[in-house]
Amino acid sequence: MSDVYKAIAHPARRKILAMLRQQALSAGDVAKAFDLAKPTLSGHFNVLKAANLITEERRGVTLIYRANISVLEDAVSGLMDLFQVGEGHQPAAPKPISETK
Image 1: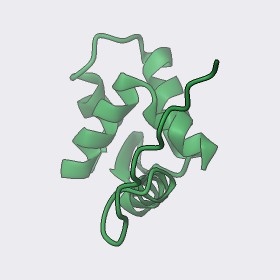
Image 2: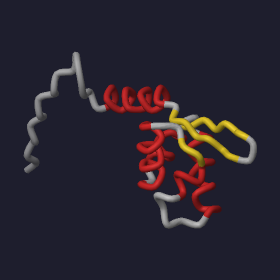
Image 3: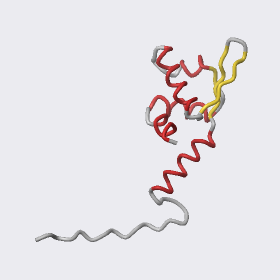
Image 4: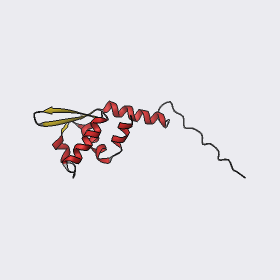
């Protein structure tokens, strides 16, 4: 799961995920939205693939990327559980601050 959090920590990777959530796109189509060198963008794709957040399909010489939303949903669910946010969680009452003398 730490790979997922590392992957979504970078704004460019979050933007790529948002784009791929809308539709599958070629690497070239994604690249048009960024002012990044191809090796840098390729590195972002590799981090997203390593975290299983995107899948890659080769069509001839073109690479088509798709978001793997279920992995992202699992990560969000894990964070919600960790911070006790969402259905079934009651906000914890604040603990009083004890004064030391």
